[in-house]
Structures are given as structure tokens and as C-alpha cells.
Amino acid sequence: MTTDLHFPTPPADVPMTGPTLVIGPGNRRGLIDAAELWSYRDLALFLIWRDVKARYAQSILGIGWAIIQPLFTMLVFTVVFGRVARVPSDGLPYSLFSFAALVPWTFFSTSLTAATDSLVTASAMISKVYFPRIILPITAVLGKGVDLAIALAMLAAMMGYYRIAPTRWAVIVPLLLVLAALAATGLGLWLTALAAQYRDVKYAVGLVVQLMMYAAPVVYPVSLIPARYRLAYAINPMVGVIEGMRTTLLRTGNVPWDLIVVGTVSALVFVVTGAAYFRRKEPTLTDVL
Image (cartoon, rainbow, N blue to C red; front, side):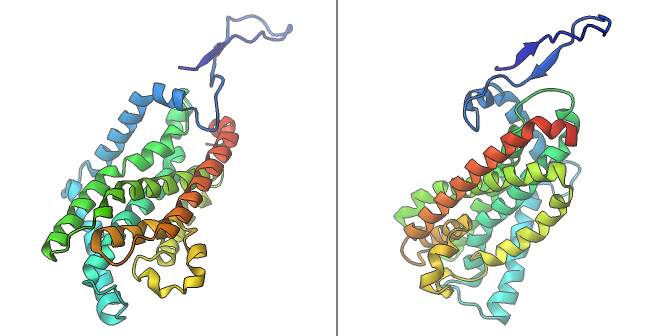
């Protein structure tokens, strides 16, 4: 707990009505104060649980929506891109090819959208009590982990149906998903701080996320991108994540370490710059929300 208590001295011409308690952040270390975040871990766990519970409360299908969304998207992609447009799928059934990409992409896109909206949604709580505001976008991303786990179980079932065994490099899949979470968190820190001041950001994110999906190899293989452009293409961290998932789980080729490394550097840049921008805006968040 790093909260400091200050009792400022009022001006001489102001009558004394008792001490004024000002609650604010203490002295922080670095862009993200890990010690302070750890001291608020109970709040973080509560926010994650509240997010999961609220998402499926008063819903007939409940957590089944976590299955329906990627399932129906996969069916539409299979018909439009697999059957009509005949987009290549690295020799795999198009449904499996697209679903292996939709699992990390859906996690990334829903996490980014939730993180962007996290400050505005919690504006009432922010105006009443102090806590490290950065907890909100981080827990918004972590709260999507439940849906991700369900989608991964569906992917495993589809791999069993098509009798495709993962490679030994499947052990890096958790790291790829961490990379997707870092990318969503870094961009989310930028966008949620901007959305607190400019509400247009909230509405623009939905459109931007859709455009980003077609800029990532969700419905087509990376092999369609000319080799000389692939490293630049991998600046989008989801390129390495999606291609890594396909190669390690579906045996579509060698693990694209170059794409993964470029994507990791890019995601870390998003996190560092996003945390710096968020921290610069944090003192004024209560006023603009």
C-alpha cells in the first residue's frame, strides 16, 4: 500500500473547518509499479470475476456465447473465403485453418475493445476512491481469459476430429497467447486514456478492429504476403501469434521465429509507450471522466 495522506494548510483568509483529507498515489517506481499492483491484487481478482459474471448474467445461453461467437464466425468464413473465394488454407480444411486463427484473434480483439472502454465504464468508481487506474485495462484483458480457454478447448476438439496432432513446439502456444495479451494491453492503455478524453475513440475502435482483422492472416495464409514484406508485416504482433499457432498446432510449416520476434518487440513497444502515456494522463482522469 503506497497511499500517502496529506493534510494541506488552508490559506490564512479561509476559516478553519477541520482538516482536509487528500488521498492520492504515493511515490511510484517505474512506468508500472508492480508492488502497488500486487497490493491491490484482491481488487484485480474481484474486477475479473465481476467482468466474467456480468458478461453472462441474465443470458439464456450463458457462457455458451463464448462458443457461439467464434463458431459462427468460422462457419461464415468457411463459406465465403473457403468455398466461394477459394482462399488457400495450407492444405488444411478451411474451417480448421480459420478457427486456429480466430481463437487468438477473438481474444485479442475483445480484450482490446474491453480495455479501451474500461475507464469510461468505471468512471463512478474512479471518482470515489483511489486505486491504481491501470488495474482497469489490465483486468479487462485478463477477464477474457475464460472465453479463450473455452475456444482453445473447441480447437482441440476440432484437431481431434480431423486427426491432426500438434508438434513438439506446441509448448510455446502459452507464450504466443501472452504475446497477444501484451499487444492488447499495450494498445488498450493508449486507447483507454484517449477514450477518457475523446469519446469518439470508443466508437472508432470497433471499426479499426475489423480492419485490423483483414490486415492480419486470419482468413488467408502468410504465404500470400511477398517474402520481402513479411518482416514489416510482422510489426502487427498478431501476425506472429496466428502463424505460430498454425505451425505449432496444425503442422503448416516451420515455426516463424522471425515473425514472432518482430511481433514481440512490437508488443513490448506498445506496452512501454502505452504505460508511459497512461501514466502521464492518469492525474487528470478523474476530471475528464
